[in-house]
Image 1 (cartoon, rainbow, N blue to C red):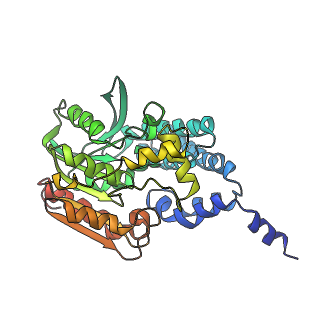
Image 2 (cartoon, helix red, strand yellow; image 1 turned 60 degrees about the horizontal axis):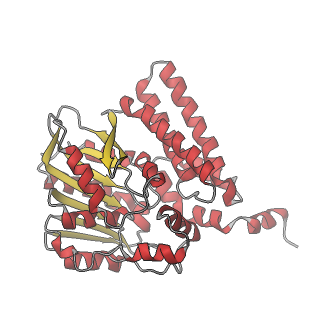
Length: 366
């Protein structure tokens, strides 16, 4: 007979087990303290308790932010609020089984990041971008002391959102690049109004049109960056939008299959919900629209492609196919042992892609 501990371990929800096994590098690399990841996941046995557990931990960081701000420590408040936003985000990011609870956590994530934005170094600004009669929301940050900064438009993935982007933003900002992390159709704040959009050149056009209305951004030096599903969206946009001068694609697909076989069940359900599909058959039709085949040759700007050999969601041959088809200068970095988005070896590409982007957008080395 097994011990009570053994029985409890066996009873753990396989969705939670998968989360513990695969997500630690991403959570920690993007701002969740390691101890938080260990303690929160150790206390969750059912996936249904995931969002509430992370929201409780996020509330701890939020309270620390409130206290720091009340005491006049603005920099500390920004840090606490940013951690709170990330913890709320990771509570909701795939929690489509309870949309009401997911949205409550999501709005707390947005609220906390919004509290942080004016306190950050450099500060950020929440922006509204007109799109198809409604709005897309983004966080715009500009490097200190630059009158007209080049900018990196940051494209989210299936389950990422602009509130998760602080580490990536800071690496660009430190190199003199502005950043605009935005929630596109089917992502973050836009997931309630718009379904996933395989033709991502449409929202990117709206974003660049908006940037051209600003006087503090250099419209002649616009780069694009995408992570996971955004690693498909960014090069997709670069196929059509010639105002893009450089592109970074992290673990994106070259061509999606219509089959969801072998993919994590919670990711599949998130894709179905965020594509606003009634069933997997309809979701499959959306997935099949995600293809760079035959159009990647239109990418004439420089592109930097990153893949990991142990990626369970996007195999490295997808990156190789994209690299083989583009027409412009290409850097292909396939990282041995790298997981999805290579978060386990983030130091092999995050600074490198930021340096590369700064060079492409003609920023002096620093």
